[in-house]
Length: 383
Length: 89
Ligand SMILES: Cc1cc2nc3c(=O)[nH]c(=O)nc-3n(C[C@H](O)[C@H](O)[C@H](O)COP(=O)(O)OP(=O)(O)OC[C@H]3O[C@@H](n4cnc5c(N)ncnc54)[C@H](O)[C@@H]3O)c2cc1C
Ligand code: FES
Image (cartoon, rainbow over all chains, first blue to last red):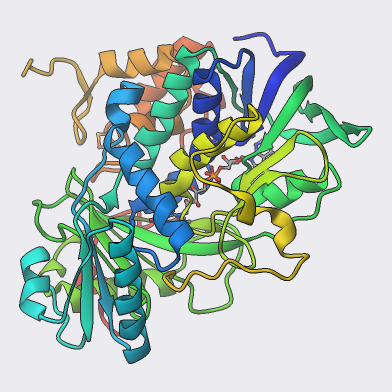
């Protein structure tokens, strides 16, 4: 057992993909004494419960740019971290069922093309079936497809960041819950935990769906909340049942097949979201119905597990990145259901910000004070 | 490919050496091993490997098995066909 530290240079709160990536890029940048504290185990929050989809098909320039940077990062991440992340680039096949949605897709693709994202856009069901054999989408108006999109393994990715960060000297403490934050003279001074107090110069709040509770400990109000989403996984079957990530906003579904053969599928809550992690029979039935409608030949595949996780929501479904009114108290949170894909780039941005360097993508607009100012980042392409 | 010798988790073909290697790196809870190695995630949902892995964890941490967290078991406990789940009731 490592001795519990009394001081640190930087303390990162939360061991999801965002926290571990931030720890990695900070440690790699040469920061000594980087400490990450996690109240449970690494990857026990939303990251370990997510679909882990990665896509560059967005409708807002900021999101396209961030996602493209993520794809670039993911494509060389196994090599960089020295462990596999389970990246699988089968593309995202987006399906439009509504007139307005289809019109929006056309605009999105125009934007994507202008940024170098070579999305294919088409109405031919046969083309969709070339990408996803046997998919039943006669009722769709059109499709977009980008081959570099895909999904990775959330556990392998997060643990790969953790292991690589450890090699650069970062320290990880599990079962260590932050219970208070010490602020003096408008600046963060220490993190109090169930295992003792760590004095430190900088703190990054990467507590996902709990970030608002952590922020409050320093008197900062974040308008974030947790939204419960359910998901199921089947037994492994032969590859080729669903090669791309099959997804629709109006159809309210996403379906993917992991490299080991299991099919993962989820939907957004149609009812008042409940909190907590219990799974419901209603949801599993409705997801099962959707899968069979789209992929009729999947009807004999067996579901082995179902679970629920939290989307870490903000009022405009865009993340909060940057410093707060408390000096050296930083935030990387509120990823609103797409924090897995943005995690690695969020880590790069946070590392640069904490080091006073120019980040790879300008995060100014993602300041949390935008809500007070009545500003919103509006992304048309979200579930 | 080298032949797998001491397979503990048959569903996911994980050997005792891999389990010991990750425990040594600090992944000393069942849930962490499950996330990294997929042990307990196979069709048997850990019925075949959980006890042996808990014994390894007990050896490594010095905690009795009764004090270890056996990991979350998520519904459905027995695999059910999608077609059956989708039937109107
Ligand atoms: C069903 C589902 C499907 C999803 N699908 C996708 C997808 O396809 N693509 C995608 O990009 N995103 C997806 N997401 C969203 C994604 O999971 C999250 O945006 C992302 O994992 C957020 O990462 P994080 O590191 O910020 O948070 P988390 O992984 O939740 O990590 C936060 C950590 O902080 C810890 N913590 C909290 N409070 C404290 C405290 N007081 N002290 C110490 N530690 C604390 C928690 O235990 C937790 O481990 C999905 C989410 C769900 C639920
Ligand atoms: S033997 Fe390990 S999951 Fe079945």
